[in-house]
Image 1 (cartoon, one colour):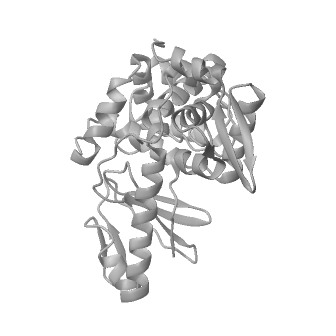
Image 2 (cartoon, rainbow, N blue to C red):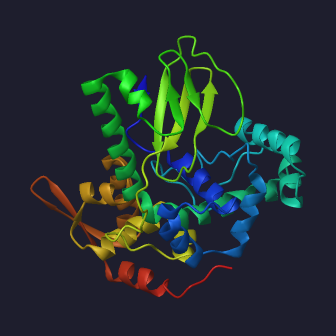
Length: 312
C-alpha cells in the first residue's frame, strides 16, 4: 500500500471541473468557486460536455501538468487512447453534443479547441492554488502515514475517511457505481485530493488508486503569487505566466521559493526561470550558492499591462 504525498494535478483539474459541472456546493470550496467564477470565460462551459456522473475526462499529461514546459494551447492527440476511451464511454452514458461529436469523429479543430479550453481553465482554476493544494495533500498523506505507523494499518484504513470502510479483508467504498475488484498483488495507492468531494476508484493493470477528499480545508488563492491574466497565460503558457507573476510579486525570489510557490520541482522551476530570462522578462543573480530572480522593466510592464486584458 502506498499513500501519495503529492497531488495528481491533472486529476485535480478534472475534479475541479466536476465541482462546477454538477453544481456541487461543498462549503470548503465556496471561496475557490468564487475565485474561478470571477475570472470565468463562458467558452470554458464547453468542457462540461465531457462530464457525466460516472466519468471524468482525463486532463493528465496536458496543460495541467506544470513539470514540463507546454505551449499555451497544447494540441491533444485525437488518436490518444485516453481521449478515445473517454469519448467512447461518454457516448454510452449520454447524448453527444456537437463539440463531443466532433471529438468522437477525430476532427483536428475540435481537439485544438479542447487544448485551448483546458489551458485556459487551468490558468484560473488550478495555477493560483497549486501551493495550497500541494500542502493539503501532503498534510493528509502525513496524517495517514503517522496513524499507520503508530496505530497500525487497520486503524488507518478505518479512520481514513467516513466513506471508506475496512473490515479487515474488504475495503468498501461509498461510490456511485457498484463493482468488485481484487488487488491480485497490485499495490493499493491512496491519493488524497484537495478538490475531490467524493471517492473515486481507478483500477489499472499495475495498481489500484483510491482518490479521497483530503480535508475540509478552505481553498483560497495563494497570497504569495499574483495570478496572471488569461491573456498573459495565453501568451506565455499558464505555468510560465505564473512564474513571472511570482517573481514580480516577490523580487529576489530564489529558485527554491519559486518552486514552492508554483508547486514545481526545483529543476522545473529553474527551466521556467531560464525561459523568462532568455525572453528578457527577468534577471538572475547568484549570491554564493543561491540564485535570485528579479523582474525586468519589461517583465513588470508585461504583467501590469495584461491586468485589464480579457479573452472572450
